[in-house]
Length: 362
Image 1 (tube, rainbow, N blue to C red):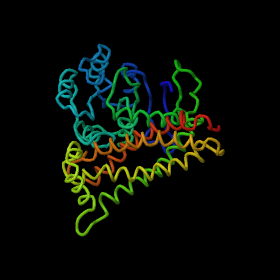
Image 2: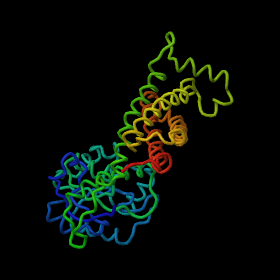
Image 3: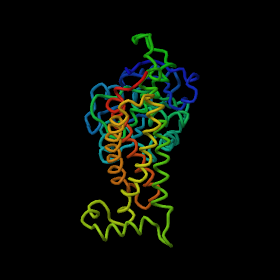
């Protein structure tokens, strides 16, 4: 899906209103300062990575520096809002470009936006947020009542978590582009609706089945890890200690306590049952398989794909089991989400293009 430039009619965005930008532009220097001033804007909030500088880099382009200098000369106040986990780099960038930064709860939380408004004494209606991400920059701005300008991402690599956001962003924008009034230099024909494409509808069904299977998977994991007891102790602690005592060389490389030692077993049980639920529903609903011809071969292919995805799920879930120290239940759910998300992309591609390729119906 190509990036389009123009103004968005947010009154037509419906349930996606919070994700809808005010305008879109290809690069920062394409945003007209005259237009912003005439629109009553006096505070410009800027994202960092892929908005004013590439990810992990610290050299601003001459065009960005000129635009910032012109904004300051015009009388705008500027602030940087960044979700960076590298405050030292952010401080160096701030000093180099001469714009103060705001720290706080990560976007799309309104916290940093509100702090910038309070610090400058400027109202939300007189502020504008400029950034390259719908899921953080634009959503956070809309939650605060600030207009957002969405920029096309700069070329170059980006953070792994951002790549996940981009997938969601593309789906959302395939709908929101219908509210776009293109600029004069853009094609007047809107891109084909992503949701009208058979593969996207098919993937939507796959995700719905996956959501049900994820609920089954996570419920079983929670039952085995956090709800089931043997006497006064969690069953996962008792069984995990048994694994550590019996297989120390195998367990010690990934676990430092009994609950973590038992986690792969609980994850396997949940994923095993959820896998068969997904197979049955995807076979009849997603890929519409009616015939019994070659059912055995088809099942073997599905199992090969599914259990490879299961291995991916278990490994990733186990590695992220302690992602938030001191919060085992939340960590368990987050680990399940991450593992299931990665496995979902693998499973869809494998089932569509390998397991059900011959038998698929339109």
